[in-house]
Length: 454
Image 1 (cartoon, helix red, strand yellow):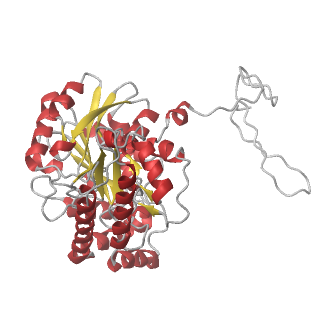
Image 2 (cartoon, rainbow, N blue to C red):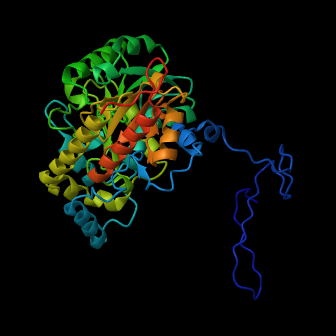
């Protein structure tokens, strides 16, 4: 008999049943006697799961302090603009999803890289003469996080390293280390509004460096790099022949006194994978729509990197089809007034928060230029009862019910991050409570208590 033959057995009057017997030469047909395997339970987590570690979750989950029961909790820690309901997306965006649902056209599988028509819309939206794009240069993903994951997976092998900003978004490390990729942090300089320490960056590059991650505008810093600084970053990448992963999820989310320059528009000879999505600019992070824009005008990536991204995208069969169906309307029908109003609110809140915290002795906020965040330095010598930023922010929760993320989460101790998307009245109250907290705990450099002069 053919060893791979499927046998049909007749069971008389019983209902027709398909019995499948696959006889593989050299394999025992007796159940429970698998060659080379001892029959015992041994279920262990994979190496990848053991290597997966999220610094934010590890630190926040270990903070056991309970909020002050007499004060309503104010969370300045969550990078989700929808939490408080004060920043809804535009009605045109909501209508686009309703129309896609009602059409009945988007209930099935799409190609793993996204519908061609949807990729054409993204390419058209971001195309410009300095950085042309076609549909073949776009891969749609399940949020910007998956876009970053695919880029790291296609560019780096286990044992290689990537360069990431410090302070920086913790997901870079979480994803890379789970894949066996080493993470080398390069420093951002608070005294230069979080510009990159370019000399230190270049000193980290070696023969195992697979890519440079550039996050602009920045989470957690709220900084926006100037054109000249971006050009200097590109010069380092060009000299060292290192491709760039540009995390530009906050692209165009910049305040009126700054300008966002897409990295790919400033260089034709450095290959760049730019990651973005709907989450922040359109205020719909839960819709999980991201994209990778492939900029490779010198054909350095060639077909191999493109083919690799396509193969990797096939692991989960692409992002939500309903949102893909709505992309054309979202990108082209969202009114400019919506973007303007969102940014005006964020800038107003940023200015309010910066002004209030800058007046508090012992705190050194760095004025942001975009995104949704503001970083605040803690002059720890004036708060001697706290060993570090984690203890400082823990006690702030316990006494004032104000939760800020300690910047240890971003590998940058003795700072904390404030999210500026909350309603203005809550921001005023939070700043007032932070001032009260600092008034109570501030000491002069000599160690004697000192009242804050307001």
